[in-house]
Image (cartoon, rainbow, N blue to C red):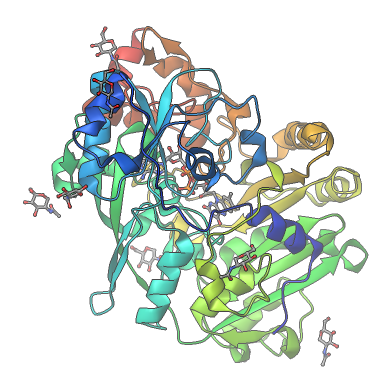
Length: 542
Ligand SMILES: Cc1cc2nc3c(=O)[nH]c(=O)nc-3n(C[C@H](O)[C@H](O)[C@H](O)COP(=O)(O)OP(=O)(O)OC[C@H]3O[C@@H](n4cnc5c(N)ncnc54)[C@H](O)[C@@H]3O)c2cc1C
Ligand SMILES: *[C@@H]1O[C@H](CO)[C@@H](O)[C@H](O)[C@H]1NC(C)=O
Ligand SMILES: *[C@@H]1O[C@H](CO)[C@@H](O)[C@H](O)[C@H]1NC(C)=O
Ligand SMILES: *[C@@H]1O[C@H](CO)[C@@H](O)[C@H](O)[C@H]1NC(C)=O
Ligand SMILES: *[C@@H]1O[C@H](CO)[C@@H](O)[C@H](O)[C@H]1NC(C)=O
Ligand SMILES: *[C@@H]1O[C@H](CO)[C@@H](O)[C@H](O)[C@H]1NC(C)=O
Ligand SMILES: *[C@@H]1O[C@H](CO)[C@@H](O)[C@H](O)[C@H]1NC(C)=O
Ligand SMILES: *[C@@H]1O[C@H](CO)[C@@H](O)[C@H](O)[C@H]1NC(C)=O
């Protein structure tokens, strides 16, 4: 089977697999201490689940799911403790002890946060990590097409369990198998099925949450505002989401995949220009994203149907099936060899091959081991009005041609993701959005600390301003970027007003409702980080 062969895929492949420790077994005891947090925990959590920096397994465990070595430097603000709960009552104890002892907690599921906020802080402060990597069961109920998944599971584990249960069920979430369910779901979550089934959170039916009072709550008992807030507003502001119940979605027994590369000399500028309007308007079964790197645009596609429905590309008349006709409008030159049929679960490694995988072995999506070698900087935009051809010309000729250029990933919206109100969940990038842009730039050890890559991304982001959404310039919360702004703590509470600068970019006017939900569940702002939702009532006065 052919792999995605574009250079972008190679860079991505290495960027994807940044690390994981084979075993999270923890053997050492916490040091004896008079720290009130440890004292409190010692009566409620088995001591081997609490690590202090003197434990031999502390550093390996801290590294366990760090994806970006930028946040594992000597200057990184690290946690004082790591708590590794194995059940929900340990999570409750950790929160209660944290409150009682004045120790703040950062929750880590898969550790993929682009700014590392699940395990490091921007400024010196004492905190403990609540690492959920031992809370990762997946329970699929195929007859009802539902599943319960713990936050510490990785997406690959969820997909694999679904694939085992039925070849005709899937779930609409992200591409990278090592992304954690906890952060991904609470920030929205989208991938190749987004046009047919929307976001991961559009398919969440229940959740179990531990709040700042240590209560164990479900959909009903947490209340509708909080249940709304955790489905896209970021979990870290509202408590610890322990597990999620999701609706699984039907997929055909065979899906079609292809990856067609078009270089600038073959007309990439024209195809990308057309793609902007064609891809978001295609029938919902056809998803075509673009990865643009250097002078090549790679069109990566998942079609919930057979190759026959797409090819051959004939004349677009009344006799041609609608799908084939609409696909043809894109002007991609494609032959039968490039079009492959496989099960949905096989498409997961196809789209995310990565190190040590030939893209065909499904078991690889269970692998949590990666290397800590690729540094990365990302940011995002939303496009509501197609970008003019001449602007694409200069993007290719200037920005993508630079020596330190990164890549652009364009994900088309429309259909299911745009079919629900922007107030249905905190995720507001719905009707009217043509596509999402993710900017990615990577570097390696000795790469000058990424100065050139940061410069490229920041200058390119400034250049793009006239072409993308405005007032506010929207951004995707799961592609977190502290360049957009950070909380300001006034008294001991994050300021609502100051948070608007980043909050309205991620959430538009849902930011205010999120702050109201924060008031209900955590008015003291115990759960906080550099971009957590501030409480409305208290912060409003500052
Ligand atoms: C290689 C790579 C590929 C990606 N691909 C995609 C993609 O295809 N689609 C997409 O939508 N996104 C994608 N992302 C972004 C990804 O969705 C986010 O980074 C997501 O937040 C990661 O979740 P996590 O559990 O791994 O992260 P973590 O770093 O563990 O957590 C992220 C944030 O959520 C909080 N949090 C984590 N768990 C919980 C919990 N249980 N309760 C409350 N708060 C919690 C953390 O405190 C932190 O603030 C990708 C990221 C990477 C690094
Ligand atoms: C821990 O320290 C306390 C007081 O400092 C002492 O009473 C206790 O015996 C110590 N426990 C262990 C296991 O060393
Ligand atoms: C969690 O584990 C502890 C042992 O550490 C056990 O005593 C407790 O009953 C468990 N709680 C639940 C809800 O399973
Ligand atoms: C939530 O918890 C309440 C109280 O324990 C219970 O009655 C209810 O059945 C639970 N589940 C849902 C989905 O509300
Ligand atoms: C199909 O396209 C691929 C890639 O462009 C090319 O290598 C191959 O020769 C083509 N096959 C046919 C039958 O045209
Ligand atoms: C997991 O991936 C790593 C490299 O990313 C590889 O070295 C290792 O062999 C893989 N493990 C399994 C069980 O496939
Ligand atoms: C959009 O919403 C309508 C009405 O709820 C529904 O009938 C249709 O199937 C939806 N389309 C998609 C692609 O989800
Ligand atoms: C913050 O201050 C308020 C009022 O002074 C207090 O009630 C609250 O407990 C404090 N919160 C924390 C987390 O210390």
